[in-house]
Length: 434
Ligand SMILES: Cc1cc2nc3c(=O)[nH]c(=O)nc-3n(C[C@H](O)[C@H](O)[C@H](O)COP(=O)(O)OP(=O)(O)OC[C@H]3O[C@@H](n4cnc5c(N)ncnc54)[C@H](O)[C@@H]3O)c2cc1C
Image (cartoon, rainbow, N blue to C red; front, top):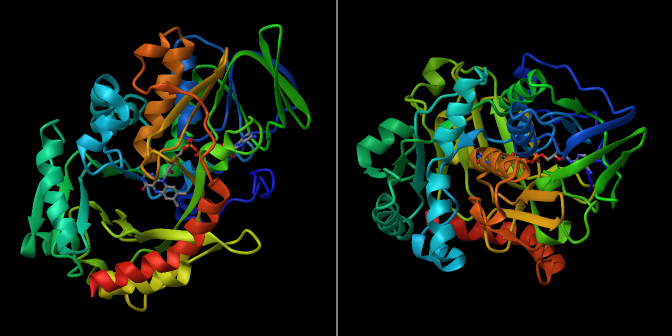
């Protein structure tokens, strides 16, 4: 479903929306604006591009079908994980070649620090904390893989450590796993407050943001781009497309180059210390190594947030919450019987090669998307990199290779297969964790 298909003003029932102090909405575009740059999509990617461009004195207009943080950026688990989803550096190096392997490895390992620096330098109030990320292994095979990964990635400065037994139990509060890996540079943010904070910083530098303004068409005439919305239009020299999992048919083939996936989350209200006390006491975020991963965090006010993978139901509704609730009670039996007050999900983009994609299909048109579930830090990096390109950087000098938009072969079957495979993957995970 396109973002226009969902009621643009409808926000998901997320913990983040209910606790964000700022509930204002940006007005829809009415009339015409001429800008140096038009950014389509007000998630982390688009907003950070807008911030960097406006800091450089460029005039920027941002349009979103919903609003700032309405997409995945305001709905996610807020886990700032400084790693691409690749177990082995060799695989990544084969895909990218030496130059981009080196650039992207350095960029991704530094991506959490880059985000926390951005938050500090703009004094963004988003409950940011860099207490480390704990990735726990659900079986011996995954533990063995972790040992190799630690050796391989630490050679590039990842700084990961294996922990197990009592030490793992003390840091996680679960006995469902017997080993795990700490990545110290990982952390957490309140994602909607982060998106709003980046948007506010861009606005202070002169960027103009409009919500409830889906871009319906995008054309280039005499070197200028023109985007039309229901009640307005924007002309610009450059367009930055940052629509990720909500990509619609605006650009030919773009939606066919990604597979939309639907992660989901549930959250409690503040819990008594005797219930939550042993869970993640030092503030690590946690995720596991299953095919259908769990990811969780404990909030400073003792709420629990627990996430996994859902899927769209027959009417486009998001399903999978009951499974999630059963899973959290297995991983953290301390939480049996607590009330889960919020249930929500959103859409992200997976790519065939598991890499983020940067495209420049026409002169003055940039697209950045496809973070494969690791987008909180990397989407901000992509925004920064697209701003560098607009400001004159050579395409060959960027952190990401500039590639062509390529439809995924047999995509329809893969999308259907992905959704129906969830049950099979859950069963395999279950058999492996018994
Ligand atoms: C439930 C959930 C949990 C997640 N957890 C994590 C996590 O813990 N850690 C992590 O690293 N990543 C996580 N992710 C992924 C991460 O949130 C995304 O990778 C990241 O937010 C992508 O940002 P973005 O700006 O590219 O896209 P989005 O934030 O999705 O923004 C895209 C925007 O484009 C707009 N749009 C689309 N089409 C149009 C149009 N035609 N006109 C105008 N606007 C348009 C949409 O309205 C939307 O607001 C999670 C995602 C979800 C959904």
